[in-house]
Length: 247
Image (cartoon, rainbow, N blue to C red):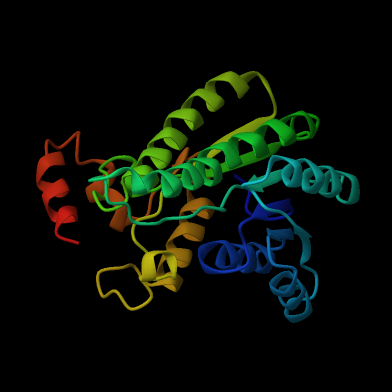
């Protein structure tokens, strides 16, 4: 991926890693459109960061995705990159059926949302001379966090879907990347003050460095996610699962 000179749509960019990446990509010389549900947050981001544009989108709502993507493509026909940041992560207790509401919301947002966005944007992106789709999975795609089983399952599904997407789109101008973060100190699952979570700025620094120095990388893996990503290959899945079970 060329990290400058792009027009980038980032649904799920009103806070946390999404907003952090939006600001980093803008600073690198890209035109960024941030997406999110709350218009007041979008308005504030636009006001505080001249040059960034925004669009209201609820990635759990198929109609909202259709409206937002049509608007982005119409207003920004030069769009050539989408980074699928939007997601939710909530704990579930599998001892009773009470977890189903959380599971269904998680699947709708974390799996159906990106798939719907891809379906809506692939025709336009394929018309560009070069384009990029960056999905966002997680280190938990490779070893699940037992406290968040559906979140982990959706991220495993995103990893699998991304691999198929890359193969099927090999005959187009679209490059397919996968960003797989470790635990990062954001509001997701209240990890802001978790000493074991990777500091946000450290994650952003390393991610942008990988993108700049490894333009042909397919998976964007910061060093801290390696113990999860390669646990199976190294025969350490049970060991890592035991560690995660303690959290």
